[in-house]
Length: 626
Image (tube, rainbow, N blue to C red):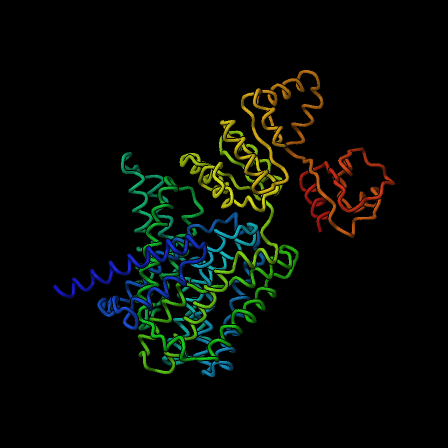
């Protein structure tokens, strides 16, 4: 009975401390992993002595394995194909060439800085290949970088979690527990990865069929869908591990094919049409937060302060070398090309925090080796020092790093996700703008997210909500709700608090237009807009049809000339450098608009209006902004 009480006490303590750490991390808007590790040490045997992981006995590795499976599944579920397409070549390089550079570079640091053997260096290098969604996703959630940057970091994290788990295990078995040579390591890695991917895809297809084709009870359908997907993650993990053991693929410590299986299953299910997707995502998110707290606090309670401080200056130098030399080198190598700007490449270089896979697998290895061995001390000390250092500095300073490198793009904020707000957001996104919709209706938010929009939940008249949406760096804020009072307040906040240059508001009652204009807010009367459109069709049918056709295939955009290379050119010279189906329609200077003359010379600060096919107009905009 006392054993059961001990387990209950430990679990309750871990959950309570974990929730507290999560709340604190959300408040400070940094990844929670650092707080969870510190909390684990504090409540562990060397701290307050409230948590004793040995109460779980020999089942601890299995519990940790299932928990990690849930976490990896969650990360892969949110990895969408359309996001990966933002930077496919660079992403592929990061998870192949980048992973190899990370492995070899980290191994060299451990060998020559820490003074360990090459075998230990390779093992640490294999573990630290992983970044992981548990530490990357919180960063990109609070640092609104461009989609291509965020998707590259998240894709790298999910894929390299799988790579690190399997690679570290085969390295441990074949290098430290009895080497069979490099070919055996490569063969074992490929076999376990392939087995996991096959199992994961099969499980995902079965689950998709059940949810799409099998009738679920109407009242409890969302609940059943959540449970089916949750169990699918556990089944994929367990089935892959069992099959690996039956086929003789796994070793004493398992095969980690289960990690590949849950990653594959999560990725497939995240990219197919699923009923009750919002319910599934919310449920999985809550479960993952609980599991994440349990794993990190439990593993950290096994740590000894001597593990972190035992390496001394060598450990600090190793941390600096891995984070400030190896990581930038592999990122700069893998992102060669014109898809990322130099500041964006530097930002990706600076964001490489490590997470759950290195922590869990390193602890498993330490238990297998024995906590008193030198290899275990170096392994655990180096891995957890890098986890803590990268999470604290890279996670905590991510927003400041992004601001210093100027990689947080100017964005357009649309307050109100109704028909008008949604239509406006579609047009802005179609022109390549970074758009954030602010909406407070949960049902509307779910519908918008299903359609691929980025949405912040909250009341747009609340200063904190606008700030969280990125109002400090917004170039446009559009108030598009049905409530004129709300739109007026949004406009006031945008102009007076955040000093946004362009503030436009929907006016539902024409008599309120003057109140908006008195605050220097561009007021668009809903009734007048419809009347103008109808009048164009009646009086100017040719122009109306042309504008409709232009809206489908063409674009009209205005850009401020900020490139010294363009300043000084004539309109004629610039035309020769633009695509054939893009034309300069207007040149604006000192608030005066006029048709351009071929001999007009362009100056810095001029505004040029381009008209033409969408792709050509975008090329022209990029050319003038370089």
